[in-house]
Image 1 (cartoon, rainbow, N blue to C red):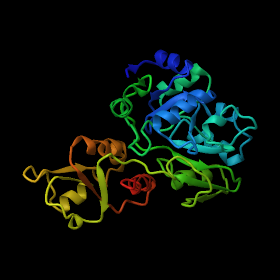
Image 2 (cartoon, rainbow, N blue to C red; image 1 turned 90 degrees about the horizontal axis):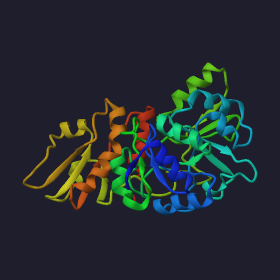
Image 3 (cartoon, rainbow, N blue to C red; image 1 turned 180 degrees about the vertical axis):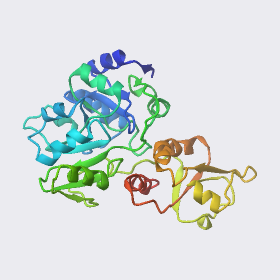
Image 4 (spheres, helix red, strand yellow; image 1 turned 120 degrees about the horizontal axis):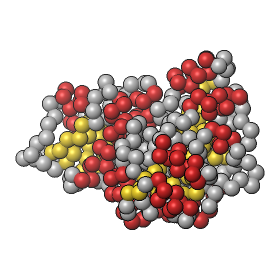
Length: 329
């Protein structure tokens, strides 16, 4: 599967094929959102359950409004303020919508304008939305660079539009905008409660911000196992819970490793993956999936993820959300 340029990506998608494309959050798997056969290929190559809807990507918030029912006041404000960017919006589909193949049979669609010039150029040249679920086999860590895409998909897709490393590293925030008086953060990301509050205050909008853990429908990341390497991985609170004497991996923050004087041990083949410092959540998020995928390259039979008390800020919540799902499949 080759790396490709913009014109090659446009050509492949117009043929009804699947490619990987860059965004500021993670890489996505792209196909024409209006082509049911092409959308079906995305479900197939991801091994994704058919009831798990796909996020649709647009080149502008104005293009989103062409495909959905009229939106409420605060949603239009957020579209203007947060796009392009790491926020996705759950909106109502138009009747007989051409996007229905991407929604898992739902009457709603999740829409996003990614903040990456290559992908914005791609969608603009196509003049049609593309589906863009994270570029990973279902259950595996999302890809944040072309090499991760190559490792997971090989020849299963037509190529990858090379945009380098993803800047943020965790998937977009998903915002339920269906209620005119409240907004619900369905999946945390780089846009959180504080960012939404600032926008609502700026525009004098009275909107209740909810952070629900109870879902009435399937959205990406909330129903099925996610983000895990193939290696057996167990989450633990402390290294005292490890009964093995040799040949395993410890995954932890830099602070935990330092406090417990944990280092590589060649004799016992104990290997360390340092997630980074809690003082620099941006770096932890950016490298999170690369670190989780690295587990499989170390050829150990078992890995242990040390749980952390993550800060209760926007990125801390997003990182905790992803790591809470690791090792559950």
